[in-house]
Image (cartoon, rainbow, N blue to C red; front, side, top):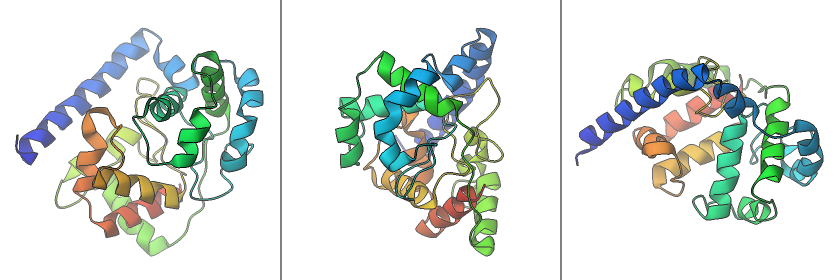
Length: 221
């Protein structure tokens, strides 16, 4: 399979997944994907051990750790399960921490708690670099065109799409260091738990300068 044909398949999968969002909305599943099926109040207590890195309010205390405030419950649940199952291994700390969380109601409660918090908000940094990143976010790059535009899956400000699409994580307001590392990990293949390899294709088509620029922009939203 050529890279072009592989990219075409991924594009088709994106379209199908985004179309499926409409079905989710009709079945009233989108809300549960975004807000979670757990109990946020119970999750607050269970998430205390997470606060050391991700902050008691879901805003991380160190930029190497991701903000969790307002993150979609379904996404959080999947990532922790991937750490537990060995599908995501590039973070020794999270592999260890995930092993301490019981799969099932405890994890659902924690995911619902973070989803219930006020949406993460970033801090603007280098305005000139962020401007370059905004262009990448909205229009993609020369190599991949608008296929690489973050807005396609993550929404105009990186806060997600409408209620019919809770399939892609919130990235607007996320920490710059974390975003850069994840894009580099997708590009190198260290991280490979993205649906249909979508992020791998996008990251492989980006230069490191583009990765830094788009991360600068997104982290300021």
